[in-house]
Image (cartoon, rainbow, N blue to C red; front, side, top):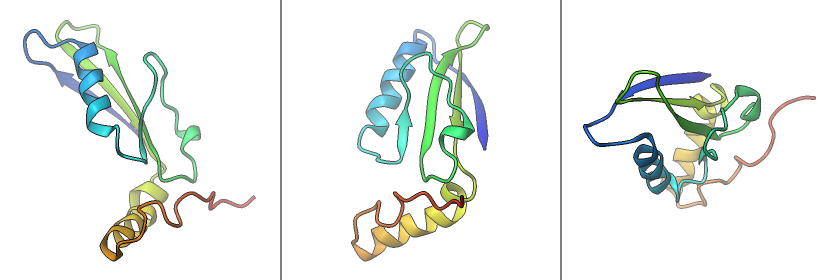
Length: 105
C-alpha cells in the first residue's frame, strides 16, 4: 500500500529540514527505512515484509513537501504488527519471526 502525504511546512522549514528530522526520528526503528534522497519507494520493495520505506520530496507549491511511504498491507498492516507488538509485550526481540519471507513461491 502506498501513502502519499502532502505537508505544509512552517515558514522557514525546508524539505531538507524535514528529511533530517525524519532521519532522527526513525534512526532506531528497525522496520522503518528513510531512503536516500531522491529514491522513490515502491511497493514491490516491501512485498511480504514488515518494513515501511519512505522518502520526502519537494512539492511544486512553495512551502510544501510530499512524503511517500509504502508497506505490505498484510504483513506490516495487520499480522506483522500484531506479532511485533506481542514480541514487545513479552520482552522478546522486536524482530523475532519478522525477518522471514512469508511468501510462496
